[in-house]
Image (cartoon, rainbow, N blue to C red):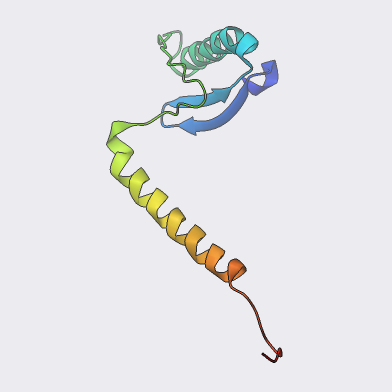
Length: 100
């Protein structure tokens, strides 16, 4: 519903969505997304319309759910290990077949 009216959804997050918009379109897109949630609740709940709220997070800040901080830190650590391992393989000098 939202993508049909031009809202750029980046990801669903449990009972919410993460959307992306240019600064000048942000207010409009937030209003559109809220309207979509309200319409969807009316369809699913047979005339009962749920209220919505929102939080705007601007670059370079990011959304952090306190319940997932430990998991996110573990994930970042794993990614850093992978990056270090990858860099070690591409930056090591190769002397195969060379005579010194």
